[in-house]
Amino acid sequence: MPAVTVENPLVLPRVAAPAHTAPQRPVLHVGTAPGGLIDGTFVHRDSHGGGGTIRGGDTQWMTAGSGLLHIEAPPEELVVSGGLFHGLQLWVNLPQKDKMMPPRYQDIGGGKVALLTSPDGGALIRLIAGEIDGHQGPGITHTPITMAHVSLNPGAELTLPWRPDFNALAYGLAGRGTAGTERRPFGTGRTVVFGDGDSLTVRADDTQESRSPNFEFVLLGGQPIREPMRHYGPFVMNTDAELKQAFDDFQAGRLGVIPVDEG
Image (cartoon, one colour):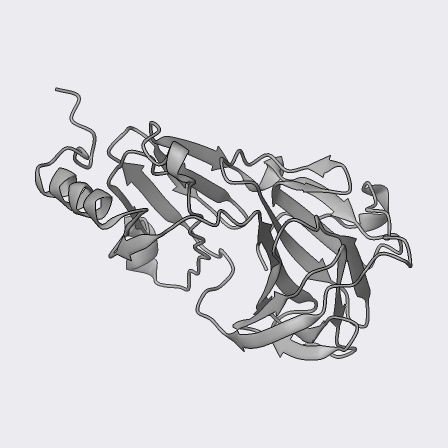
């Protein structure tokens, strides 16, 4: 998998194992969801001047706020030469007070993420946003969240502290393993929903797929907003009136054009 890595994870800062008394999050549900690991190259442009080239292991973080138009596409040379490319897209809602903030674009190269490991060195944790055990990822978010890409060695087990006021999900990118102390199986394309607690556990199966030596998955969690939500197409607002206004703004061209009109 073309993501940032290290030859010896034992040189990295280690995430302390939670106390044995920390309540473990149970697995509430395992289901199927679309997605994949970033592999290949995309070019991004938006109507507020943000953009760049996204390569394996990179993250782009857009705050849509009051609205923008954007596009991602493979570069021409990749289209001509052929090959695979995959991307994982995550949509995070904003609280009502931040819905109309100015749009913002963050380019988080793979080399900028915080690299961590487990006490036994069996896991490589790429912390993209949020905090785990006092370690901070580079992504700046208005809705408090944690997002990490984990590579777990065959047979290794990872138990992480997790903020009790956050929800928690795991999404399988490649390989297979189990979630929770009850060891619910999940793997590529499967999503795990955890219940309440202070820590969560994922274990890699002893034998992995030939195309991926490790169990690759994303851990996600955030503070629930608990506000009314209305959505249609790409627009997510709090009321029907706000949703109509968002469509009116789009149709009237108030979200700009791609590429940016330097005028």
